[in-house]
Amino acid sequence: MNRKLPWLLTIILFASTHLAEAQHPKKVSRIGYLSNTDSATESPRSEGIRLALRELGYIEGENIAFEYRYAEGKRDQFPKLAAELVRLKVDIIVAAGGARLIQAAMNATKTIAVVMTGGGASPVEAGVVESLARPGGNVTGFTNIWTELGGKRLELLKEAVPKLARIAFLYDPASLASLAVVKEIQTSAPGLKLTLQSWEIRDGDNFDRVFAAIGKQRPDGVYVIQSPLMNANRERIAKLAIKTRLPSVFDDKATVDAGGLMFYGADLSHIYQRVASYVDKILKGAKPADLPVEQPRKFEFIINLRTAKQIGLTIPPNVLARADKVIR
Image (cartoon, rainbow, N blue to C red):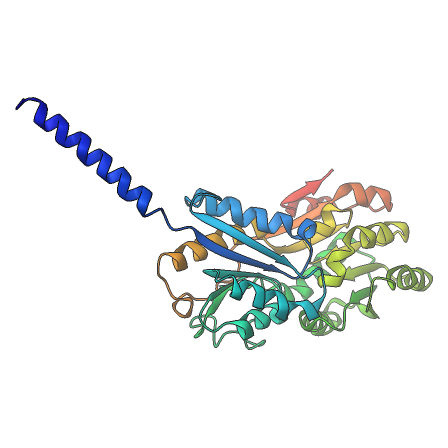
């Protein structure tokens, strides 16, 4: 009997431990994912963040759950969708969009942490954080500084198209971030000896008309500034740029995958990993106010060589050699 006692105690301890776990299941953290686009457009970013969280030990259905809300480019839906996530009592809201989307989340809650995924105007200038080093409220995350890279994109397009002298740029005047890029490229263009032609896009019915007008003016290239409206029409824009045989540069990587010529900007896959790390830290007790807003650490230069061939453009070898990725 004495020999069996230790085994008996072990069995009892094992059973009681599992009974306790059954009575107190693991907490499932709930993440609200708020996007300014649709599920198909948002999929690369949301999936990238989900996979990065999985690498950190967050398994969907076991210890984490996601609530997705998509505004599908409709800005008037931002407040409603943010309020829905707050009512669901999510632990964190991941705001995948620009300043207006983040502001909607901020207006909906002062206590739930909001993690920005990067995009839009400077979060300091937009008033969503006090400073990058000390956000000060319930919002932190990442800025991809794409509004500050407009001049660099013009420079790269001119290197790819040495004869570039006149460039048309398309923008959505309702997007605050787009207006910031417009200001940036207007400042940079004179130093590159470029003449700018501006074209406003206010709705999805404008694209064919605007590209037809651009084709008649025959600029040497086109720069399309992203916004929810532009992102929702990226394949159409890429096809129209090819149809008018215009070398194009974008601040949206997915448009180059869809047929645009060139992209330069932050390495988004790296940002997705960092967003996941911030979600992890907050779930473990960190406060958004104490987590500095991070800027990109890695950048990408992508050239679509298939598109270059379609429009009859030969990219100089020295420019091709600098590309991080060439789509052939």
